[in-house]
Length: 171
Image (cartoon, rainbow, N blue to C red):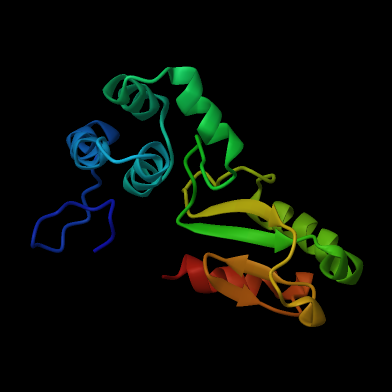
């Protein structure tokens, strides 16, 4: 059962609303607020809980930690790991480092945009896929490369993207 499903012992597929997650956010803040440098760990755990960092959660963190909202938002904006928009279940990152770019990374990115109907930084309506770019995944000799969550795909061809994505659509 994934984190967004109910915490019951049954096999139900009922989604928990964001409002229902706020008591868990209170617990995260309470457990971490007295630690030195607690803001980033609280933000990380909050993003894991919600799947992104909603404005209401950031305001709650700001109020609870007695720091300005602008400071919290500044930290979120500084680190690319954090997202204030919902991300898909699968994060697709296209390498646009030199080797990947030269060997077709830009074409792979364009093909993914067309296939998914979204741009970089966006998420599909069904919240299945989000699209992002990266600079180097350490597989330059096997360029172009994409990552879907933690899975690396090497020597990717635009004509094979549909087959790769279908694996995730069927899960």
